Image 1 (cartoon, rainbow, N blue to C red):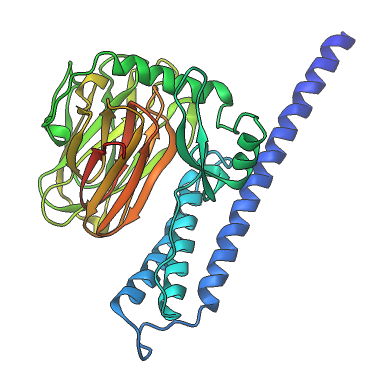
Image 2: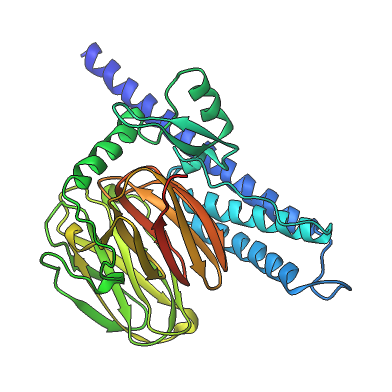
Length: 379
């Protein structure tokens, strides 16, 4: 009985320590939001001041939007792992303020490295280093200061689930690469269909709904369409009761067409999602799930619009992300379960951003405008 009692006490103590850790992480993130809000309040720039330009005003709007997005994204988070959207929003806002300060001083906007390749929670990258997974070829990746030191010392970088996750992504990517064909003009956007899709659901305006996965317990994508231009917040349920993942979808020139990754987990057969239209608009929409083989694949070039998931089949090396339109554009590497793994490139508005492809695999583009991805020849 004493052994049982001791084991139970240890479990309760462990659970208590875990709760305290989570509470401390969330308190730290709340403090980051508060500190950023105070920096906004202290900033001396006024949109109507003499010499103010449209670029300066756009930087201020981007900084203010990031503050509101960070506050909203924190609701329901349980720990720092859940709060990646908050951290990205704060990072976007800080960069916007840095751009504003540079313009006010008469200089160019600062160069912006992406968030750490190995884990976005590490924060902004500080340098590029040469790194190779076990059995893989070396490649240049942007990393935070801590990971740069670890790699220089011959140690493994700190990854979300440890070293195994980093290696598994590249192994799965190499397997996917074995079946690739060299299509120079692949079908574009979510119109391409692969294997059997889940049954379509449709509606009008806000609401909570469920869609059936093509294969229970397997990763898939959610394809969402509207009949007309719209601005929607989509919150997709995640496995094991984790906080829903939020997406801001927007199209001013035509209907919203977006492909959203659904990570596998828990043997679930259905996935729930919540739609919220701006200003209570009651636009018509439809949604369905599609299997992984419906994701458009490319090795040299692909074009798209808005949010999408693509499968890169080319080699590790240089590339380019081009974006035309308002707002930010982010290219993220996904692992073989379609979970977010690393930020590869980021830009804002009309921009041409250099990409260092880690290797073949699944990637997510988060954007509102038109974009293209290319593989560039090694110089």
